[in-house]
Length: 191
Image (cartoon, rainbow, N blue to C red; front, top):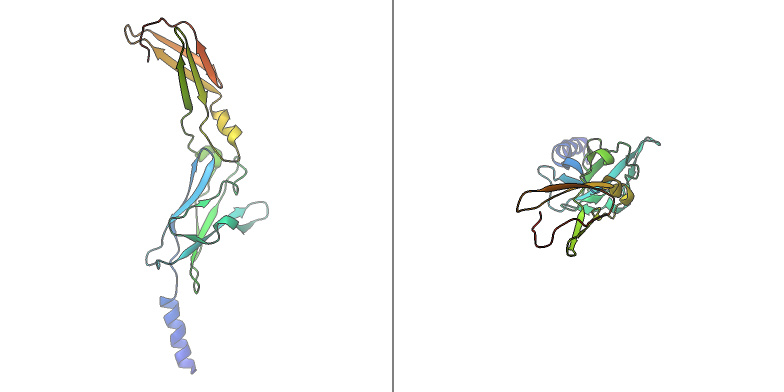
């Protein structure tokens, strides 16, 4: 191949043979279960795949996430087991690739699991027993590594009960799981 054609080929590939990088790389956390999401880069082909890495601060290097090495568009990466330290800051990055090309890596913002997770509402069970109530509260279900920490968020509850007829109110503090209330009147409605 003559040098001139080779040079034209290199110029063509530098303009047309790149793969757009993913955009809006974000960690979403619910009950200390962490998922990495992103959007397709503009002009990406429909058959593109993705791989994810997390930064290991102690070793100062990027490490591939084994369960996120060949993802398709719309498939999030579960980082729950990759971000074991809930007290530290974490970073992840995504790269799109095809059989022939790779994009540049796109990083997330720093993510702090304990500060940035959304904790769901408790599971509530209410049972009436004549002039008493049994209120059971449980932490939201979580399959994350730190279920005990999710329970810690729910170690104390304040329950407000009001009688509908005269608006009389009672405020009760509950430590951990349940409240047994015995001073209610029969045939009254409570909220």
